[in-house]
Picture 1 (cartoon, helix red, strand yellow):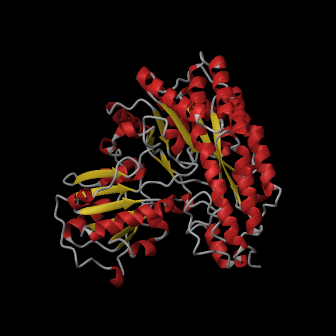
Picture 2 (cartoon, helix red, strand yellow):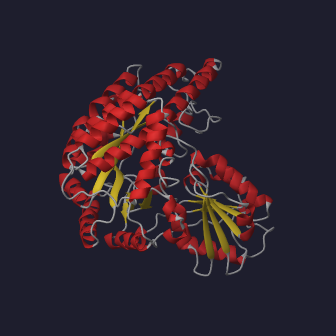
Picture 3 (tube, helix red, strand yellow):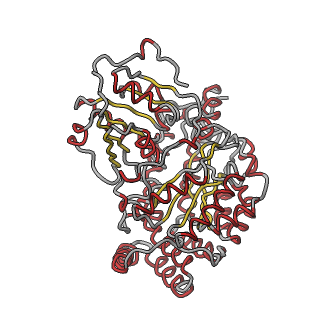
Length: 541
């Protein structure tokens, strides 16, 4: 449902109707370097970025057939004035971390006299802020109503604000416009099976944006999307982007079985990875089906080894089974595990940092993505922090070194130093590569698993030479690099899945190790800030 706009947010009288044959430019601002971008690793590859903007590609598919649509992913190519001047309307999507790029793109478009529209997670969380910098703001999922928004643009009756409250039937969502991509610029492709998550984690905005009742596509929709990718020549990794792939585990099992049949029919052209909650380990039939469908690895939202912290934020699904046992079971079943971790919960004590380090080492998770807890707009945590007078409105997440946007119960300087210590420990070169080695030993690959199609020999050789030059010769961690390099090629040269994963881990050090040093240095500056602003150190009673 789209409510009628209020008088102050009515139509835009300065713009005429755009007509039926609109030229729409979709812009995805570059995501700043973070642990999640794998930027240093991509520098060694032939690709430019890990994955494409699936949300904008889906919006492109919703545009009327009469429209001409172009996409600019600023991680792949620059946005020029000529690009903007070509368009009748510039449509920007973004997450909070892309705030600066979003503001710049909208400002340039307005300066050049072009209509602007913004949507996506950031706009949905901060619509009032977006109304100050964009002509039209779309809040929520536009799948079933975009035709009405498009008609408004064509007729000159577009509203300033569209607040979409209904959750669309994703079985009617069209195939994303993958044809708009410079497809060779990406290390993996993205497809979506479901939206929503049944859990109630206090800090999570997914349940706010997409609801707590998972809505799934039909298996045949996913197969059609894969067919489209295959027709475009894609034979690499495919990320099923669901925030919790097993939110509806019965439907996920059905899909995994259909994916296995598709893989067999096409001689296993791709490999999959996805995100899930730790209770995936309790669904053995699903795990086995995923492995048979050629899932290689899974990201788990582990968050914390502290039961008190998990209970505090209502992440009860992680309390049903020992998380270390979950990871061990998944490794044994054929899924390699990476995970997310958080510090800054009210229940966290100064011991949490050693606990995180011990857990990450014990479970041998090389890519342990550590973050501060943050109160995202519209979440239960945000509401609680606001009610308790603890929000720091001026502190917007801009990087991995940005402290929480609320007054923590732990002394801020202690929290920052503990975060700094944890990062420095887990991404110490020796520790990182030793953990990577143990993860390969724990991961029991199955005969049905096959790595995705490898580049041509010449391209592999160029990647190898770049790795050896930047990591083996110029890297500050040369000794750890060569030790891991020799071990994996001696041990796993005949095990194709493990060799692929090992090579990926080898070059990923070029991202995690240098970037960690950068974050550690930046946190020194954050520590100085909180020590000179004591009002931000102690939480309000």
